[in-house]
Image (tube, rainbow, N blue to C red; front, side, top):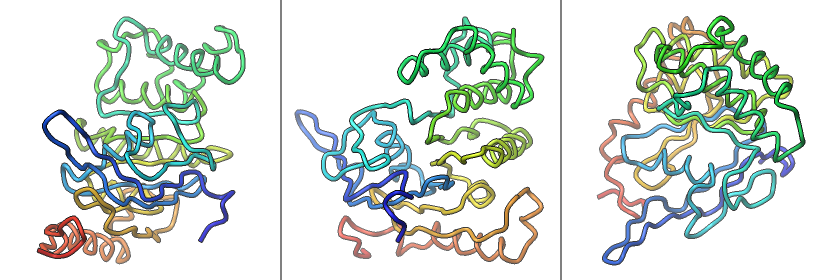
Length: 273
């Protein structure tokens, strides 16, 4: 077990229930997870199992019904500047250029930490757009950029705000395979270049993506975490790693979890139906 000062995210007995006038729905139940500082975690599982809901709790959009979520030992009460989010939809302001989108986020985030000038925020934005290979597209509006380029802007925006924790909700799910591979490499590059690595929680339904990116894979079944699997594959990684025996063995293990009927037919008490 890691020391408390090594833990970035601590989730204890987390449960989330939606309530309306006529019904209740339990979305998450008995979630327990520690994420170390600088760790890259991928959350996988079938559609509707609660992956994105869990990420929304980490973002601070939903308050747990029971249990707690702590960042650096402090219970979260809403969104915070120590966390940044990259969504599947790019969520860029359509009337702002790529540079303006990033600079605005940097300026607004910095206001909550320390005062910086708009000029400084522009310089930071330029630096990060360059890091995602969009230096020559600074003045383009989102509608003038491809989907892959827009997601590069979204990644630059998140990284430029210098969060401790990066939350990514299927950020490449809407992109074709070639662009997806390129952006996976970009995320690994940016994460690896950081002097102090960001803690990343990355939701995906793609097993290959999870194995390429993650230190650990959190496998979810409806409402709950079923298993946490270490990814003991050497870094740095690229797509050539798919040919290794270790990769193939891990892939088969994950596939069996996905298609194991006993796992997929667990009731609320964890008992096979």
